[in-house]
Length: 259
Image (cartoon, rainbow, N blue to C red):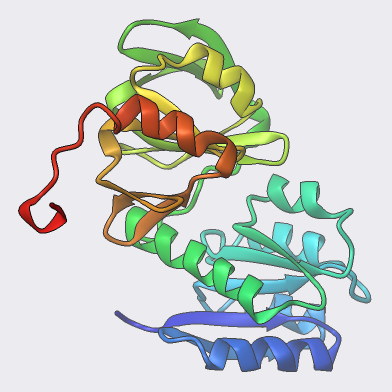
């Protein structure tokens, strides 16, 4: 696997140094540039293509969110963005520009590692394609049928077959539908509302943040659902027994080694 090129944009050198230390310890990730001045970052990234941008919000002259909106106009419009801030108040703004994650300072190494796993999963599954960021135009439709659901997207109804859905993820006030044939669809709704629409035989709630397609489950380990070789989702305590009873308890055949 080629190196994932990262840049850090933060006017606080100590915070940048810590993040660079984390990235240097992470296989397949490398820091290609650190910008302490957001204006210089804006100039430098107009001609340099990168994979991931770690960006602080509160900086002089131009804040991180404004900078990232400007970058959407150039060749880094498809770069994955990780927002870094000492405050939680920018979280919704971060998701509105489709940030893949939001890290609170001071950033613990364990929390940073979760971010890198998200990045690896997205790059592997989507081939580095950008994720649909036009959230305002994605409004869920209540219309559904036996084998599919309709989602309103950019003035048209988008039909999604249940068999194409891999899993559904909650992100604040939004949900992201990960499916097989295109970029993830982001809509303003809750998992609770969508769960009522989806057929219970096809989909199972496994966590407050996840609904998974039953057909995509490859294995169930303790407190995790395995969907693919490098993709698993957590099962919370409140959903574990229900999931086990509905999917597993009546369908277990022990191997010779388990007897």
